[in-house]
Length: 211
Image (tube, rainbow, N blue to C red; front, top):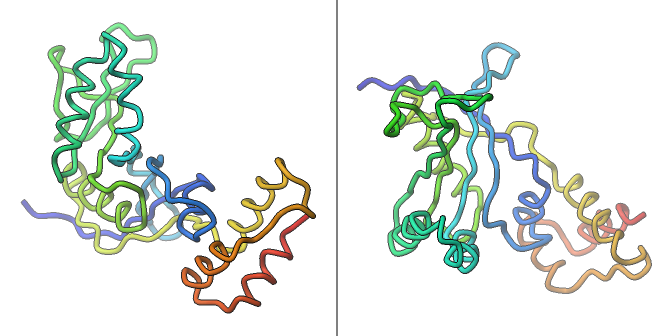
């Protein structure tokens, strides 16, 4: 099969993801992503999914195991946790649902009612989500469902370090007053390594965003 080579743009609007990427907090265990292609100056939405890691799925097992209606789901999760491959979990509408919807991709599996899923999750074997995780997920989705070879993957409207810093400190100030916010040596060292900036440069950015 011949694949169409395209550049793909990924949107991740959650600040939690960017806080983890820049080193303000731990990396996340799941994220919603939207992916686009670009034609001239317009971005055309290709699809969306939720990326889930082993850590996220493992943490939810205890509650699911106590729910008799989720036994099949629990088995599916446990099988994924012992493996090292990407897995897909599909959600289907019922034929009589008022807001019935099917995804338009040709290669999606149909259920017993001959219906395609309305959405799906992609379960990655990583424990947390980083840029490599996102890139791998987008590549396999494009190849598997869209007949696209993702030649290059970039962020759509990426959050900058300064924007992430401002939003993180704004969130922290909800719980403590600005004068009580303390930047630990571990946080500063982490940011220095992530951003290749000096300690003074990091502190200047952080202090500028304290309100």
